[in-house]
Image (cartoon, helix red, strand yellow):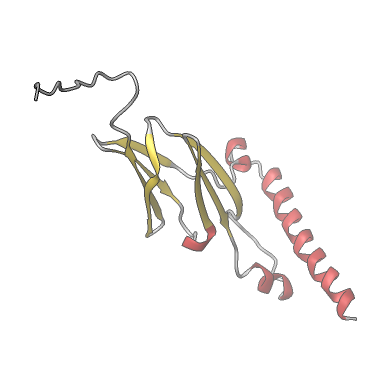
Length: 153
């Protein structure tokens, strides 16, 4: 019966997740916006003379769960916040009385506010804060460049 127990385990996980979704949607003491807001991380964006920097709050997330990439002048941040103890709790038939922590996937895309070198980007993740730094492109089309004229030989 190994095959049968596998689908039952998956169904129990799905059933538990759906119960939590319905419970959070039906809670009337929480604002509607809070009930639908899953994992949208707070982001601060600032610039220095040489760089565009971002700080993203990701509490409870491990570095391995974060993926960063750029397409043209847009940064994509993909995160999956996992609940590693959920499967144990489903098997133990735990009944939550209150569950305020949020788990799941989120993707944010942020257009870079200035021309940057995506291949020179640096990222650090420490203490729940993801810091991303893009080096600005200082030379752009349309700027005036003086061309020196060499003297006659």
